[in-house]
Image (cartoon, rainbow, N blue to C red; front, side, top):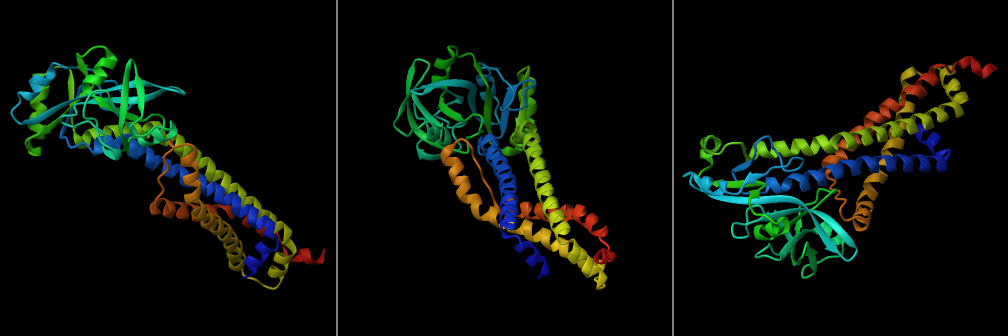
Length: 366
């Protein structure tokens, strides 16, 4: 247990180093949690939809980062295809809601309350939209702006009543808000276009056949089955978010490696004479290497345990301060962080081990 004695020789440094490591681990856990939260909020709307095909404008393959405008008159053509059970038009538009504190932007989604296709994937409080002049807000958006079921807000010139709050509709930078199709047309001022059609088939086996029929019947449109459309939107979400999160995670890992390397190197230099004595007494090279590795793993392990203990209360605190920041950590994230900290511990020993090689037994006689 000599490795532990060397660490506890400077208890303040041990605590300070472990805390720094814990903060770095918290950052990495938060990044993984934010990614999971954004991925849920961005594509859960599509994943939860009970439809077989999505019909969009040609060259548009997602609803996150592309614009799709399809002629509203195409609905009757789609309904005439025998294998189609239902056709549900949906309109997506960035809308501005007027609140006492100022205007707030939402991803306004208009759908037909009669079919409910295109509506909120999960209601946490209240109900879905049943008629015009009603709106369902994302729960985090409502929390941020101190809104609840029964409150009213202004959309353009109309006063809408909040009838429900939804989960899994938070994209962090913006949140979904759901209104009736008629309401969103009043907001736009025209009724001639939709963003997409959500199609339910009489049998899922008709998917490829109906896709071909639609493409032959209606020009300048794109048809996707649910699986392909989900992949398209996931790809768009990852291409916009993953590089940023990955960069911050790499910076955190580099900082963590630097902290460990510095502390271990200082330990080696401070106990240079002790290591010289060990070598003079015939200590095997493997023993000295294991000593440094044990110090590194102990520091990293203490930091990881501390991070695991405080991650939940810190997450709650952040979500209370900023409800739109959705953090969803899981045991898989903790396991990944544990593996990462093990790798960092091993890499961090390279510099102190290099310094150990330059310590010689003859230094005792200087």
